[in-house]
Length: 130
Image (cartoon, rainbow, N blue to C red; front, side, top):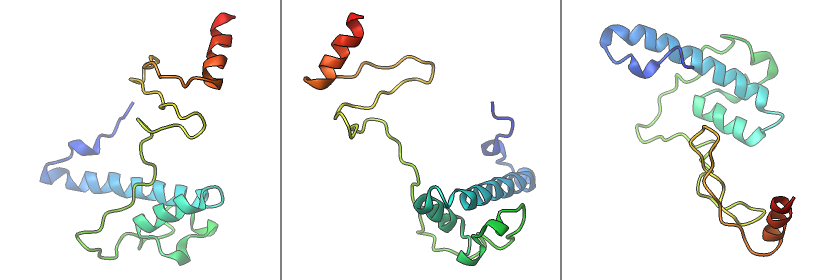
């Protein structure tokens, strides 16, 4: 459940609340990216770059609330587009089997997926026979 819905703060009098929410979100992302560096170095670097965190402010000691007050303040080109860190997997081919990744509506029901003939089909027959 989402209690805070920043996309609803569209009026000028709501701007202060919107900035408060976005600043907190930025802090959460910054700290999370710093803590993720040992496990996901490439993605964490991309996220910190997108947030505008200086390389000198990416250490564990900087993973404190409001430890870095300057990130995101550098001016950027209006044509700057941050990278897509985690693209959607829907409709892509699975690397191991070549079959499509299943899609669902989030309520547990999945669309049927075509199985390849051979090993996948034999496994499917074994699991459905028992």
